[in-house]
Length: 423
Image 1 (cartoon, helix red, strand yellow):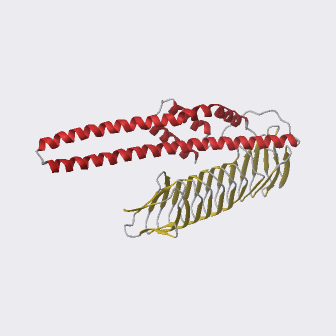
Image 2 (cartoon, rainbow, N blue to C red):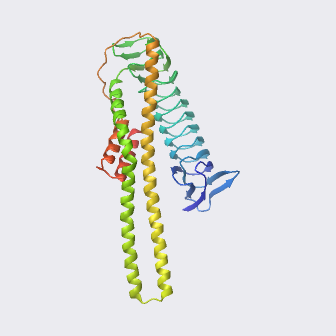
Image 3 (cartoon, rainbow, N blue to C red):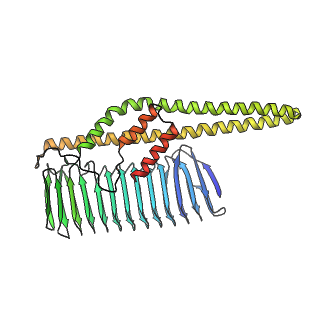
């Protein structure tokens, strides 16, 4: 295993020119880029024209600052990128690609599967030859060609997608102006019951299911149109197979959001202090252990009958090792705090964006006319095979940490498990 590193700014430009194996990239709090490769002789890390350039003839692991911007030319295996806030520009990935907790991203080609989760900006994808799963995009979403199936949940922007297989989209909000989905197979599209949209459904199979609070009808026709409220957003759905269109079941989401906003402020005020206390307690415990070890070492050196120079040299080396261990412990705990803080900030950011989108929708409803007036329906069951991961679940974990019912490490594990469940 070959390891190389270079100090950088908090927001470096990193160019990954070619990786002839799998690539793993993860953001961290250091102003440093660290490269590990399975090929001892085939890894290159150079600084050129103010940017870093990386190449690897084998598998490659890359740690870099959270604020880094990354351009990837080619990966000949699979790739995974986590916790990077700078812009991502990805050329060709011959295997599967995972992006989690990243900023805006542009992707040319993925020859395997594509998984996107917690994206802080817009997403543009050229082509994916496998299936695609998308969760929580904080901007527009453009998927030009998905050869397999598409499963998308929550995007706070416009959506455009062309899918060769089946497509399933579930949107808790409808803040964009245009939604255009073309599916070669069946198409399931779900929006809130209070959505404001003009909808056009084009079905090659001639079977269109429309499920609204006031009616549930199957139309045996190739084209069907309907207007919800004033028709502010434009929704155009086209499928070779059957279409299922639902506009219902948003009440439960609103209740969770209201409860979340009510309790979020109190928890966030105490959260930083709580984490700081845990960090200080763990560091103090480790320092106590190191002090005891130094005391035992001094006694052992005295019993060994070494010369004064040798005793001083051994004690100095041990003290330096102790200081390095202490510094590593502090840095590790600080990174843990920053990771949890970023998750907390992401939850707050999503809540604020949803609130703004809901406010815009209500303003549009006041200006327009409501072409359908229905009583609130009961919340429908969750579709089979799908586990809902909400901000409320994350909030429960953060509340338990604030109340000292779990440790920081346990909170990290639970939050990571939720992220995996939501993919």
